[in-house]
Length: 287
Image 1 (cartoon, rainbow, N blue to C red):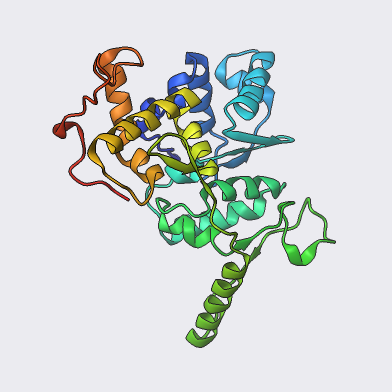
Image 2 (cartoon, rainbow, N blue to C red):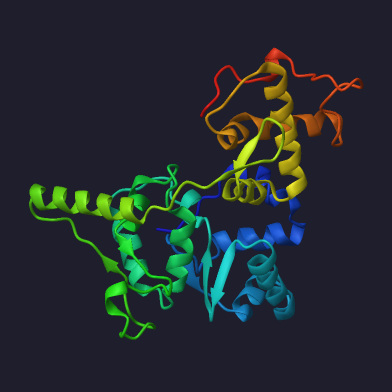
């Protein structure tokens, strides 16, 4: 049976893709769907193979690899192995035991464990992950070098990550979970300090960075902050998290205004008054 790779229709409206050249889009689709791909999103491929299969020169392919790794920061290459940052968030639609077994098998085949750390850091803490992906990756413990902390003296080119097996008894499993919670609580950093980015809008620096990564540029983030600031100032509305408010409705409002106005700066009337209408805003805000 032929292997199929799923590409979400949101690919074409993703904020980062909007800034891609046609050549970038073609190359990224190739990275997601070429015959060397895996369920894991980490696989081996070289410049010559890409050039032959895409019909480009090797020089062009190498330039594309560099651009995607250093400018867009959505892949990582070590030798002839490549990891696609958010592959696991979108490529696995339906999980289950066969997918779980496949992922565990492919994890063992990864030569450089730094690539596992790279994709694990991109999915850690995300609630929108497929349950099978969570089940496979949650128990995997890697240190900063991409290897298990208990075996620092082993050969890093062949060492496999430690996978914590479920306990045979429910009691030992509960104790293990409680111990993990206690360790995580002790290691948990203090909450990030929020900074005022506008009169009524506060964000932590990581939240601001995540919005910049999602929207592709800082100006777009500033525009979204301005939209939320104007709304909160005019309505007196308060949110537990301004970051969540921006993600839940402000970004959509920003894109809608840009489509209607054709340029930035048409979010307020000439006299500076807020021009939001009740129907412009969501009935329910997700905090």
